[in-house]
Amino acid sequence: DGGITQSPKYLFRKEGQNVTLSCEQNLNHDAMYWYRQDPGQGLRLIYYSQIVNDFQKGDIAEGYSVSREKKESFPLTVTSAQKNPTAFYLCASSIGESDSPLHFGNGTRLTVT
Amino acid sequence: DQQVKQNSPSLSVQEGRISILNCDYTNSMFDYFLWYKKYPAEGPTFLISISSIKDKNEDGRFTVFLNKSAKHLSLHIVPSQPGDSAVYFCAASGAGGTSYGKLTFGQGTILTVHP
Image 1 (cartoon, rainbow over the protein chains, first blue to last red):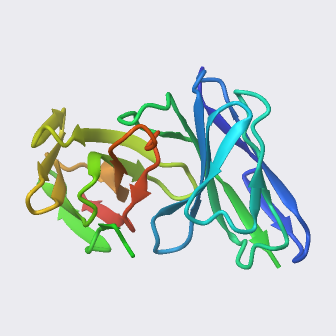
Image 2 (image 1 turned 135 degrees about the vertical axis):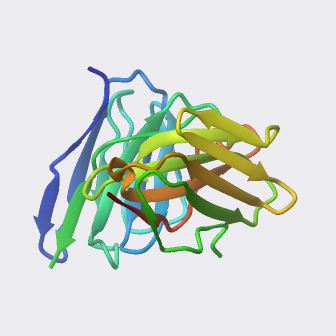
Image 3 (image 1 turned 180 degrees about the vertical axis):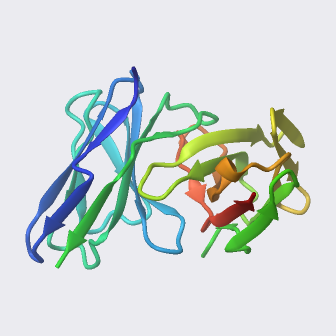
């Protein structure tokens, strides 16, 4: 059963600590994305990757880092430099063409105190 | 600058009636538009899309209309069912090879369908 798996569903961290959110897909999709959702707002693009070993900044990349060492995996690190890290993080994938829909995981709720 | 706007934060509809969700955009380079449905604490689920070369696309109870001159699109759900109650996001992507599924999302509209 193909899909996108994000883990964990809930994550709690102390301020000043880096934290890595996992995203794995078995859809054989080339492109992967990280979005952030805040209350009352739409999803905002953090980073995206069109192919293994390559990724680009989205609209709100500051304070985040990613890697794409395998086609199936696109982990996101929320660093201590991110000023407002508490949010709902969504990973997505697609076949990578300009008119293809994104398929989303079920998200990770990160709370930093 | 909000390039994709959903100006109605919420919509309440009676079961069996039509739900109409609206979306406006400002970037004339957008050429592909999508609607997603989202339940709390879950990821968005793709519903329906439309290319800018069309003005209507239909899939079962869901129809999306695109008015390019007005930079406006709408999602019609007929008939509405209680299970349709969710947050609906409008999204758009731009032309060109660099778009690669980079979607710009609206703020979302909470649809509540009453039995």
